[in-house]
Amino acid sequence: MKLRPISTNNLAALQMFSSLNCLAILCALSGSVVNSSSANAAAGEKITFVDHVQPIFREHCYICHDADGKSGGLAIDNMAAIMAGGAGGEVVEPGSADGSRLFNVIAHTDSPKMPPDSDKIPAAQIEVIRKWIDGGLLETSSSVAKLPKK
Image (tube, rainbow, N blue to C red; front, top):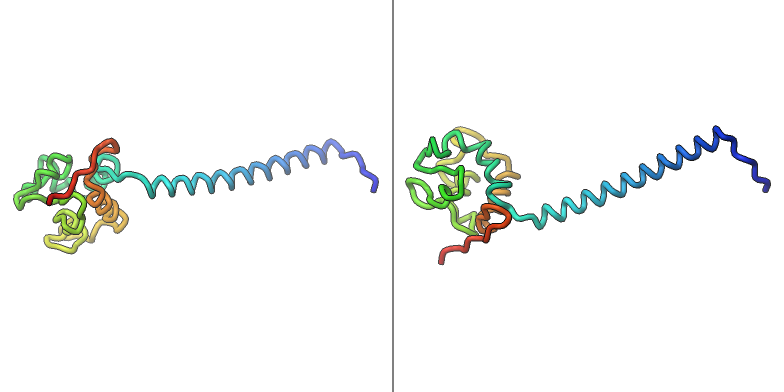
């Protein structure tokens, strides 16, 4: 087999084609690495009030349950207020979402259903709140989990 010299035009096209293929392969590989590391981070990530739960409460609850409103004597805009509870007493049980009144009214498994006169908040957000309570009510990523009462 006799090899022919590659013309300048063909060489440039071949180099561009090779570069694009390499770029496509690198993008595909890096995308799968990024996606799998994101999944691993999310799976092992600590759910905290400041980073995860407070934005949900801000979106759905602060209109009635911030320091100014305190409907039912309950503010949920900071950890101290949540831990203090409301007019009906404590609303969270560290380590037990199912035993926490706050979770049950948000999940619509207890009354009054929150938010009132509205659909439940999205299931993914309810699950974040569940994990936060079950994980010991961490305020920040450097917080120590609160222990369940005996």
